[in-house]
Amino acid sequence: MAFDVDQLMLDMKAAATGVLNTDVSTFRGFSERQVEAIAKQSEFVAVGISTGQITPETKDFFLDSIEDMTLSFVKTLRGLIMVTIEKVWNAVVGVIWKAISSATGLVLPVPVAPAAPAAPADNA
Image 1 (tube, one colour):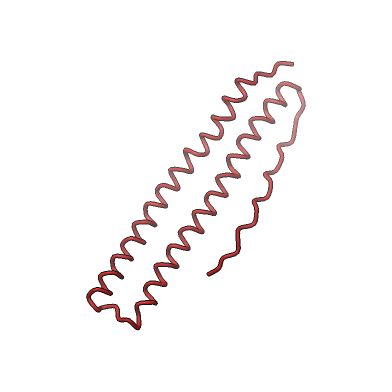
Image 2 (cartoon, helix red, strand yellow):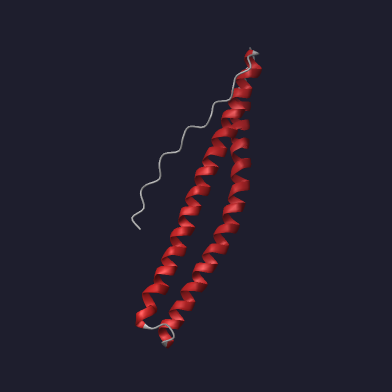
């Protein structure tokens, strides 16, 4: 039985890195667009409040919209992170199972990723 631990470690790192590099690029683009939109909306509200275009009666409506935008952004980011964690797990376990299968001659079914923990309840 030949089992190369050093090679397995390199393959595991490569599998995880491949997933992370792809997903981090996606996160970066998504985050950049969302942060810019939230910042521009915040500027719009700040200017509107300063100039009186946003009245005391409508101020909370506009502030709530920024809060909603931010919450939506963070929830989406949380979901993307959970998907990425599962992709990394699948990639690494796939490499491990392939190495074990190659060393033993067995065909091992790749396990299913464990269920993600439930997200905390929102207080909004």
